[in-house]
Image (tube, rainbow, N blue to C red):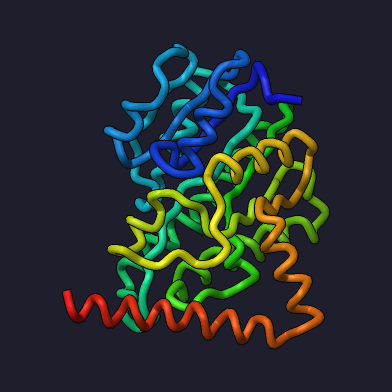
Length: 260
């Protein structure tokens, strides 16, 4: 069943998965609060519906998540779905990731969703709400060139796994996309290679919304990734071959940077 007549918050809404979430959820009586640091990107979201509101916000700054809940209390009071989707990555050798960049990545990829969960649950104590967190296939499967990003996604994965182990699992859904064909790669580095397998953003979001509608606790948009995990259990050498392939991409990219 399509999601309809709901109050929906989407972070990272100006591009990629977040932008496509806005497009696929717009209409059907839904009210959407679209949040991003990129004001220009928010301004080009569909204007056919007066039910789409925007909020320009930098979620790499500690405490910025409070502005979202101030807006909710002022305008809606309640939320039905909160898509904690905002995040970013940097591609390259692990020793080239400076601590400032890693700190910002940690804030938006890990601490922001955690703070959201801590505020959202008591705020919605008398109103059912689903928190949908965009993690990554890299929560399970490392990819050469993404050490810091994979660390943050593994962290939020384990945080939610522990929440569930404490008996609270009905209100959080985790999403584990594989590489998605969006501007995510452009922000991660100039002309970086895309890790296999790559999906279209439309396909990823369709899987997300289908899974959310069915009440799934974990959503894996890529069936190929799920098959890869299964194959690796039977043939562990598969992961080693994958690392060789992606390591070569990283090496070639580093060499191209030197040339340019």
